[in-house]
Image 1 (cartoon, helix red, strand yellow):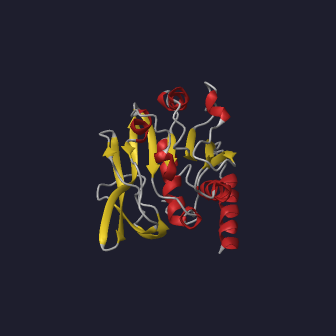
Image 2 (cartoon, rainbow, N blue to C red; image 1 turned 180 degrees about the horizontal axis):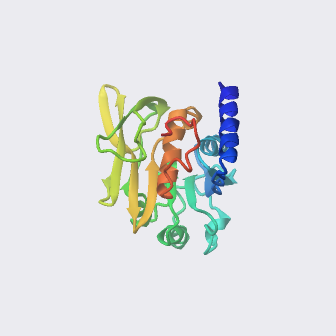
Image 3 (tube, rainbow, N blue to C red; image 1 turned 60 degrees about the horizontal axis):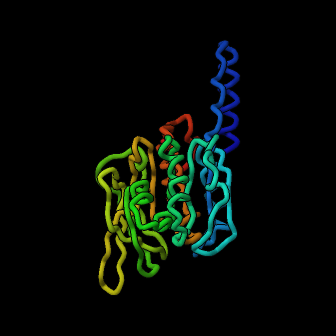
Length: 263
């Protein structure tokens, strides 16, 4: 099949050349900055799963900033710089640093997004930067304070159509953490909910949503604790489409052909 596809591609190029048509030049890849590190997760493996999964699905170059510090007090030196996100089209926050409560540090992170840099926030990014203010939660569009035991989560898409979830479907994860919802801000739009049964009781919370952060597009999901889910093609499809949407590039130009879920 792959040989046939390559043959057809070469034949198409030959036909275009014979007709005097010049194929469109490939677009330069979007530049994404993936920030990983902190407590409680296998970031050493997940950073590579995310990079490979996104780059195989979209015209995106993912650069990684990784800290091996496995504490809740992990800090990133780049966040101390006023122009820390310069040159990037989107930032993927995948850190777990709940004990970093320096408000000036957090506001410097947010300044990049307030100036228009789109964002993708994964899993424990929702539990970071608890400064005692709403600064970080307003950026996310949702406030979460904790989770229960690791058990399977049934992920169901909301009925309202959205470009990110168009063509995708729900599924049931392996053992994962279902984050609670303390508050969903008016600027947020839920895309999927998660249901998890524990001792006969079913908890139901928003697990995927987008947020309008003063005009900046932000994609979020609380899913993604264990490597099994981070490597799941359905999860990577969702994150990739969310990333492209945040950059307003969710289209056939940036979605690679034959990527799962691509249209």
